[in-house]
Length: 125
Image 1 (cartoon, rainbow, N blue to C red):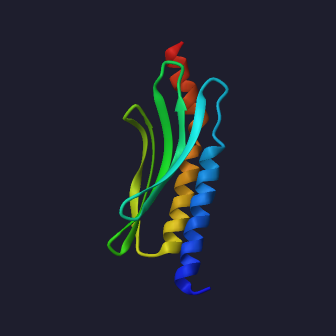
Image 2 (cartoon, rainbow, N blue to C red):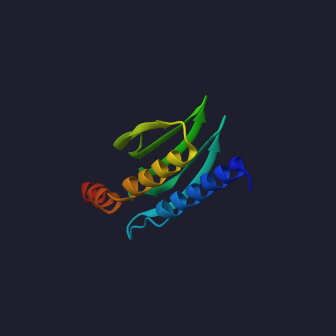
């Protein structure tokens, strides 16, 4: 496998791991659905969306995109457009560093899931 193929394989593997981390998020009182999609010109976003009993949607997501000669990695938690957690956009020129940041951000976005869901559910009751 050449270097470009190995880099593409590393990126796909990291997206798969990030998807797995976020798809495992669950709560007994909120329905969830994992999502993953590509966006132009060269990006991918993955995460899990919860529908709260009052109908609001809570999303945990990470993305990686290529623009020019750099990878851009983002991570956030939002509820109906209100940002609850916004990790700073990180920019790197190396695919392996971009992959490491993506995995780090998936873990950081997933970490407060239970607490945030419980807080939002408590507000409803």
